[in-house]
Structures are given as C-alpha cells and as structure tokens.
Length: 255
Image (cartoon, rainbow, N blue to C red; front, side):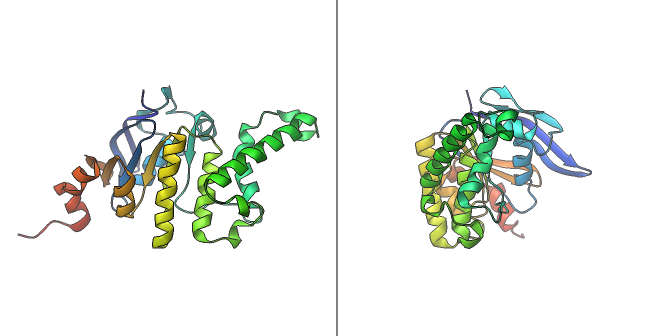
C-alpha cells in the first residue's frame, strides 16, 4: 500500500483552477519531485494534501487512511510533516525550543500535567528534549541547540525547519522549496541530507523545487505542473525529454 495516495484532486479559487485532476502514489523510501513554472499550482497541491485547503473534489489517503476532510493538526498527528517556502521559525526561542514546539502535540501528559508540575510532565519533557536533540543531530545542528535561529546562516535555518518537521515523526514529508535562498555549496549539502534522511528513515518525500538539478538528481518520479494541470509524469529522463515540458519552460518555437 502506498504511504500517500492522492486521487484526482481539484481546487479552484473563484475562476482560477489551481489544481485540475492531480493524482500521485508515493511509496516508502521514494522521492517525488513536483516542478513547474510560477503559478502552476505546486504549493496549492501541498496545501490541499496537508489540510490547509479543502479539496473541491478528490481524495487524499495517508497510509491507507482517508484524511481528505481532516483538520490540519490531526493530519500532522497521522504522520504528515511539512516545511514551507518561507521559513517559519519562532524568533527569540532557541533552536531546541523551536524543535520542541513540534513535539508538544505528541506529548503524553494531559491538561492537568500541562498546568501542574507533576512528575509525568517533567519525564515527558525530558523525553521530548532527547527526541528533538536526536533530530537536531541528524541534520547537523546538535551543537546549535541553545543558539537563536536568527543568529544562524540561512542554510542552517532551512535545516532547522526540516528537523522540526521530523519531530512530527512523519510517514510522508513535504518539502516546499527547501533550497530557496541557498548558495551552491549549501544546495549540495541539502541534497546529501535529503538523500540520507530518505535512506535512513524510509518515509516518502514530496519535493517542490525550482532548482531543477536538485530535483533531477534525487527524485525517482517527477510530476510537472502547468496552469494547474499535470503535463508530464515519469522518471527524470522521461520528463527531461518531454516536448510539453520543454515548451512549458522554454516556450514554443516560432515556425
């Protein structure tokens, strides 16, 4: 069974058809790239899959469970992790505390534990710190645990967003332009990180990215969007030579 199965989803905003009949099946350990020109509907796909927007039509299944109409925080608990195109970190909080924010919904104490200094609460907070430190170590930020994100490089802030998404213990990880704003060296390091996470953790990854060399190098399957429609889907080699893809990116040659 596919970890993520998206069946014929549609989404419109007024007269704008942002998604028209998008489908995908992502299995454990697979990396799927979603590419296309600006305004092609890529981020809207992520927003529908993760529950920010409801689909007008279609169905989204996560590990066999229908999450189409589920609220966003419940989808996260079911195993959907996500980063955003624009970095969304809490200034003033440490790197560790930023990561702990994602762990809190998964903590095992209830309302009384959150209000009273009970032993179970302290034990759970300790467990959370250990888990979060493990994910920070995984992305190479363990030595920055007490640092403020605003004092770190842009590349490290991108890594922190990934660590925070990992704290949700995802079955499926959505990465929305993780290489945006990175220099070539940082892009190379990010590529290695994504491949290692895929190999070690085994979840399915969906990746939106404008840096085509990154997508081509790490994706098993690439889906190309243009004006809300899927115009091609296949291996990097198949997509690279597709006439519709070439036209979408380079324009149609005049006769």
